[in-house]
Amino acid sequence: MRYVFNKPLLFSEELTRIILIFIVLSGATINSRDKNQLRVTFFTKFLSNKVNKELNLIINIIIVLSLSALIYYGVLLAFIAERQYTNVMKIPWPVVYLIVPFSSIIILLYHLKDILNFFKGQSENQRERKI
Image 1 (cartoon, rainbow, N blue to C red):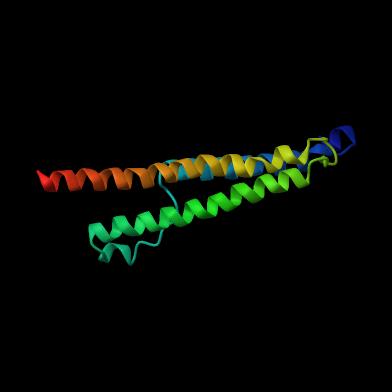
Image 2 (image 1 turned 180 degrees about the horizontal axis):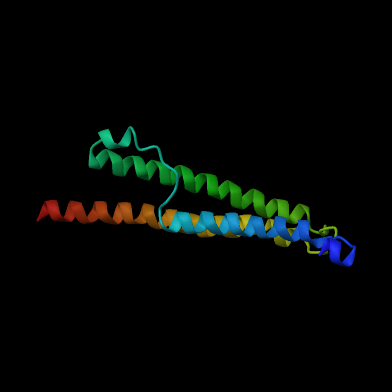
């Protein structure tokens, strides 16, 4: 297009950057839903099933704490950039910045569900032992 009309497409870099942010964070959300996070399983395959489940609980708690910080600072950044716009397309930066806390909330819900399932499974196991 640049050579046909003899003018560069000014918005293409901004649009590419924003779309890349959307795609990466959407992929992170889908990976979290499908439990496809990057893991080092060399040591965990030597652990018992019970210890492995408890280790996953600890990992999920750490992820929830990290995501909570990401949500807080993402919203804070959006408020700081309240009156800023992209140079060419004039999209408000807070709209772009709020992608991070929004996807973090979704990922956080998936990990909270995993934590809840851990405790629900543990209480079911305790009930089975009593019977």
